[in-house]
Length: 155
Image (cartoon, rainbow, N blue to C red; front, side, top):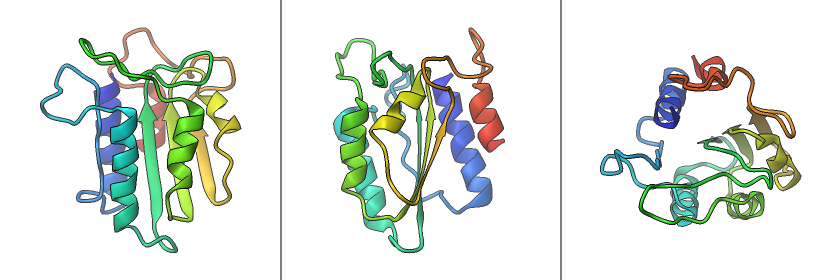
């Protein structure tokens, strides 16, 4: 589901903007040979790489994260056979603080995703969460092909 969500997001953004050479997809999935793993260091490196290509006054940084959310606000970063630390709201906020673009759109598709709002407080940043505080995302089916949230946001 998460891989399809990311692909739907990229396709939706590509239809509106030229993101083909300015998009980085990280994915923890059995198809790990196709995409780089999403780890805290790789997420930070991807954000830095995008930041280096952007005009901070004109460009919009779009970050779409999809994962399982935890009660403490962390996003689960798991890959079978590899023990990875989760992404905490505080770590994600620190990554964003280092970036130059003024305008950011953060799309977080995960249960309990609204908890990230306590750490991410920036002017010129639009936060788009799939679920309210202490709730699962709307229309989150047990085994969806793609989440309803991502479909509504990008399709």
